[in-house]
Image 1: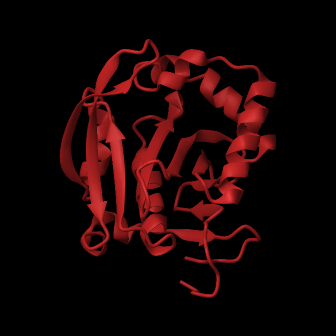
Image 2 (image 1 turned 180 degrees about the vertical axis):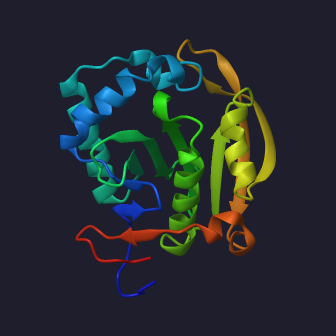
Length: 209
């Protein structure tokens, strides 16, 4: 890594994916991906119950995501195919877990589930968090009923901290349990995530990882 080029990473490439900061112009691609995946997302993503949204709402949302990214307040990524012509899902390095930490979230297009894309994206963003953002810890939270989602942090070397009972509200306001997984900076070098093949670039395309 070139210490003279700071983050954040606006574009992250892996062997099969391009993860990058959303642009408002991505709204049609995002809408198509979510519209095709609503039934798959409904059990796990409270925001899916507001779908389908109209295109202008998507544009406005992506403008906010880009603004937060530029201001360094939150980092929401789209998951694209290598040519960035199709949205395969979404992820993020969220700052809501406090200073010196990031929380990774993810969702995958219904037609792409089971291909390992969520694991590949989560491994890449874990590497970005530790090697570019220099955080102390990375967390992944998920519904305990979502075994497919919980398998990802386990696969990447995260420790299962526990289950927070009735901690998150669903779309109906009902409190649900939340499973918490954590990887610490001292544990990261020996984790599977550290071996991920990743190239990361800043806002003008300079390579920083």
